[in-house]
Image 1 (cartoon, rainbow, N blue to C red):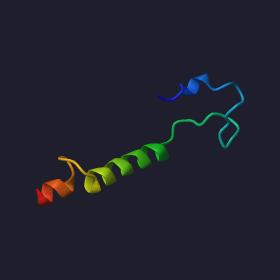
Image 2: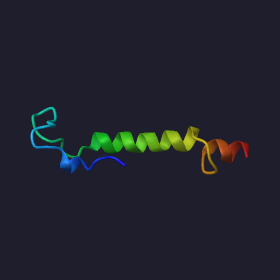
Image 3: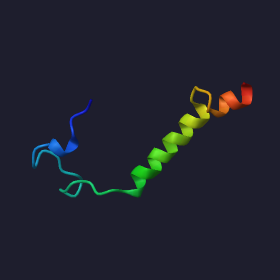
Length: 54
């Protein structure tokens, strides 16, 4: 298990603007894109590959 990110000491991590990173639509887009790629090309019963080729 990973260490809780909120336990990082103050000043240890700073984002590009010198602050913590705010939520962004770019991160959500990358997450959705990775989900779609895994769905299409990944292994398993729910993938498009399994649906097409049984």
